[in-house]
Image 1 (cartoon, helix red, strand yellow):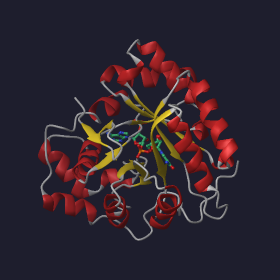
Image 2 (cartoon, helix red, strand yellow; image 1 turned 45 degrees about the horizontal axis):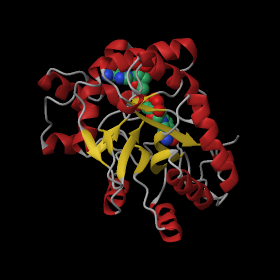
Image 3 (tube, helix red, strand yellow; image 1 turned 90 degrees about the horizontal axis):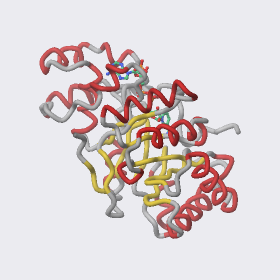
Length: 278
Ligand SMILES: NC(=O)c1ccc[n+]([C@@H]2O[C@H](COP(=O)([O-])OP(=O)(O)OC[C@H]3O[C@@H](n4cnc5c(N)ncnc54)[C@H](OP(=O)(O)O)[C@@H]3O)[C@@H](O)[C@H]2O)c1
């Protein structure tokens, strides 16, 4: 049902995944299980979400073979030093009950700490040992990408960025593409923001007989961006998968691009300034 995109290391990744921020505990396991039953196979978690256990448990309870899933987790800032990153990857796998990640990302670059190259080298080496298949980053700006590439020779497969109709990231999408990196969109629906009520999007939903979430997610897919919407509501969860039977026109894509705002970030998280505090 969900097509794949090919990463620069040759692995395939589903063109849409499930976000799991704030999906935790027993209720979280049930929500993720429902999503798996609906057809989601790409699951996005992070050590900082405190739910690697719930995601791993849902995978096991589904009864679906591990190999059918595409599991992503992320390294928190407190573990950027080489030895810490190496251990953190192992601990994440233990929490999930898995023996490899399909994709592992540096969650934020934290350039003021200046340790992300060490973290990257630890991920390159963990990949070599078979603990990770594809390695990538999140919230990286062009200068951060170039430093990784210059100092290790390894290009990230993925850059997971804030992208939604109020923050369309034309510049970063071009920067990623130029380096052969696939962009994933976090908060692809603007975290349920006012974007869902924008007349342009509401009108397109009427035109195509889809809901507003589906129009925004289709916009991502047609920009070659991989969205990872989070949905607890089962109707949202199901309909967010149903994007591959209609196509927006170039003018319609542009009309959504035009909603972008100069200060459109949800929480003002500038990757050059943002600090994780634990
Ligand atoms: N790398 C990073 O730094 C970073 C940062 C933030 C997030 N993320 C990842 O990105 C994922 C997604 O981002 P997000 O959770 O912040 O926000 P999001 O996916 O943009 O939005 C989630 C919100 O949209 C609602 N929604 C979902 N489908 C809808 C639909 N079809 N129509 C109307 N409303 C809909 C959900 O409501 P219901 O729950 O009620 O369905 C929820 O309130 C996260 O879960 C996480 O995995 C990564």
